[in-house]
Image 1 (cartoon, rainbow, N blue to C red):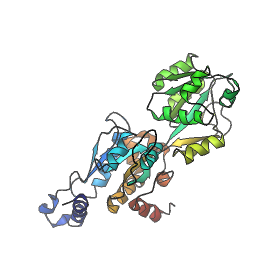
Image 2: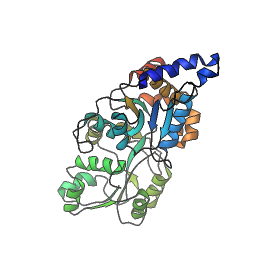
Image 3: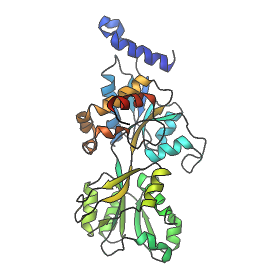
Length: 328
């Protein structure tokens, strides 16, 4: 019995569950593995809650959650069939779908499909007081900058690299012209900013988070607005989502700040059964309170956002739910 046939049996068992104990013993385990992040992060409880809610409408447990290797590794696992659902960031999902690029140099996984958009993280660049807000535009004229960019391989490292490319520099080129690039964990970068070792602190994180508030307060910082051409490239080429940090989000911020969001996306493949994908989206959209229990970041997420900013083709099961709710 192949995976799709087993899935059909599992769903038939839901309707027949009152027939007796024999039906309740139908083997529905490990039909759909949901690969998340490490067990101590936010992705694992998010995936586990979705799986639990979906499983409530089945006999047995057709969805199981397992730890994964994160945003880069999960699309490989799902695309190759090692898992049936996964979590990744929009830009990495787009690159995995396309293939032939710096992250996924081999042929892409054209069978990948998007299911739902979850809690976004917003790209922030905090500029210290006294530093020109247009400093990146002036690099070509000889200006230098001291910037913290995150750990190599992190989503923040990736975002800042793509932003700098729009100004004509990569990290090596920036240091070659006399600027300073500091890599490392976000807490270390925040400390370096507060201690005046760097003048631009960057982070890709939820808006109004504690570390961003502290960074702004530490140096009378201001959030740098991303120019429209930079935003457009991040969206069109790299799979980010246009976003605005509303005025008043941070101390001293009296205007809206244009930037981009890094979407967190549930992914699957085109071969996955429509019904279980439908139920995954339904579980998310109709159980907001339970998702907040799993991860507090869902308090700044609205179910209506579940269809926004999906960077690759959407699975028909998800499209069915979106159409039912009028979310186009």
